[in-house]
Length: 388
Ligand SMILES: Nc1ncnc2c1ncn2[C@@H]1O[C@H](COP(=O)(O)OP(=O)(O)O)[C@@H](O)[C@H]1O
Ligand SMILES: [Mg+2]
Image 1 (cartoon, rainbow, N blue to C red):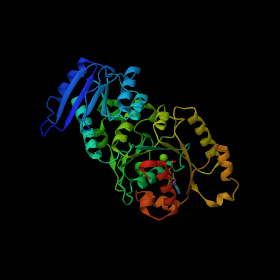
Image 2 (tube, protein in one colour):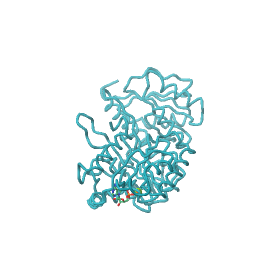
Image 3 (cartoon, rainbow, N blue to C red):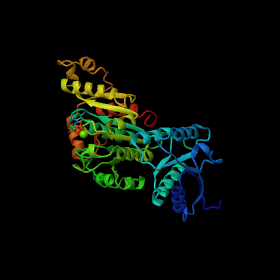
Image 4 (spheres, rainbow, N blue to C red):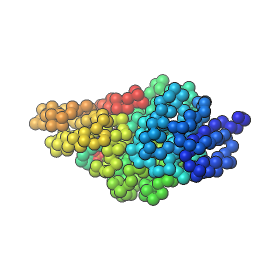
């Protein structure tokens, strides 16, 4: 290798087309040295790879043999940096599985030069950043509510802000708030930010969605975190294909340490997939009988879905101490819910409305408040390793 050649790329591909497209893609890319073999991963043990090498493997996402070979490869001592490519479109399920296995990235076929080089640049930058530093997986926290006005968006914003704050002696966490309510999302309104996500364009040309395009559609908020949000009325969330939402989430996870998700009200066809891919679901409600009943139904639905394994925290927002003395007791609500209330967030109307008027998180608008402490505890707890 000469001084310019920093990365050795090895590829195991199944078709002549994939081989041809890869050779074309790397033809003029002088900072890579490429070696390609044809065949299936199961039949070709990759040659010895150094930590800065990248392996591209062509797998059939529906083939047990291919997926098992991939799992073996990633479970082994060497744990190479693997980019998966596949001839068939990847479903949300497949994408999730790839993330869980610890794949570095995914490139669809036919392989497009721009795509694969952009992915490699991102992977290489990450490898450089990580050498020496310990790798922490992206933490995904999803905020849900069963009726409007519970404060889910507000708490998602406060959580993103809290997690993005630097703590003494700790590296700064890269945090993104992703608003998946493509129709009526209000995070950008709360934050007085420009909603740059052109979800309609992504749905029309899903193959164009890569980390570069997503970065161009991401808003940087002066509070210290990023926002991915679409203008109101963009598209009915249910009409966005699940693999598009899954790909968007996977890309966000690659670029950030923490992803805070604000979900739409309705149970869209990809809703359970997002929750299943989350490290924690935060269910926000207020202390009313209807809210408790709705939350109970939601917990039931969740248990019957593919997201049954994701831990849930119940957050009681706009809580007032005096409610203890009024008719509806917290314990009664917990009984109706079949779940304990994990976090209480005090009602502070003046603070939240003033913060929204200034387009900033409440904790940035005024620090040292009771809600700030309560939210910090909730956020740090939910983020586990990444936020602790
Ligand atoms: N803890 C709180 N105390 C006072 N007002 C709050 C609190 N949390 C949220 N709000 C206010 O409640 C309203 C609805 O909040 P929002 O986050 O948009 O709810 P949702 O996303 O559940 O529909 C907003 O005006 C917000 O400022
Ligand atoms: Mg909302």
